[in-house]
Image (tube, rainbow, N blue to C red):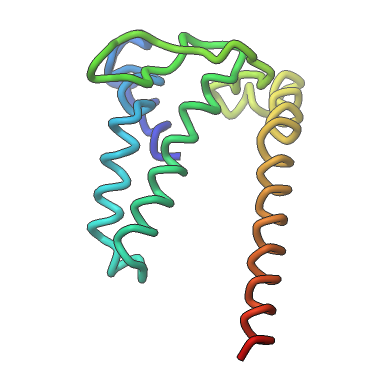
Length: 147
């Protein structure tokens, strides 16, 4: 969710389309790498090693702009900032864009957005997590049988 901290840009008067605006630099691969580096360097506080902490945070943070690029609204994501200010969308855009207010999210439109996110984000991620958990459990079981 760190990339969406950029919504404070609206309160600061920063235009949506600006590099510092919504879905701008915080939705870049450079930002994801920065978050991952800070997390990796904080690996002891995270009770991890550098590489697993860095990798997890890089994948988690970088996945956010790719998912936002799959939405059907907005101006796209600043994926390549600071090298380019261009905003990108994916060719396929099946996820309904979420409204930026709680009132709108609790409306009929918000219900469609939530259903869209369940279908295209949360169900596939849950299925992947289940498969990975089963795979890990099987690997653990095999190691126990060997010893």
